[in-house]
Image (cartoon, rainbow, N blue to C red; front, side, top):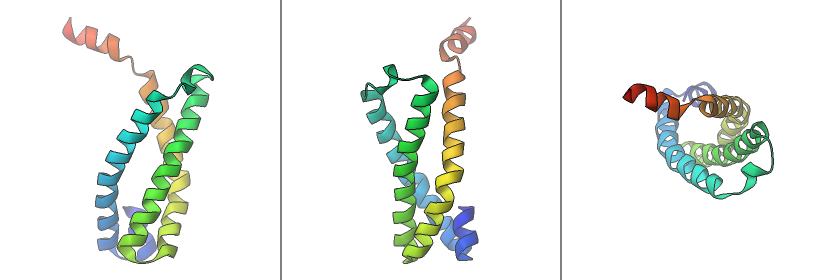
Length: 116
């Protein structure tokens, strides 16, 4: 994780936080997505609004995870909060773009053209 390295000045911390976040975020994202699909929010608003709400809920969870992991690994709550503060903006933008792109992929038509 580049931000961990930049803020701490320690590349081993950056690598440790990057590796631990990769594992924790895989689990958290899966759980977030499963819970999200069980809600009935999608039928109430436009798909863009749903993507914004999903982005915000994911970022809250993801930022909390980053802060806790960084604090645990570094022993510094200040460093954990700094990393969380930087990521809340950068990763929210990236996640929203990811959701919009994912939504636009025509999975069924691709599957049909591959099998044809």
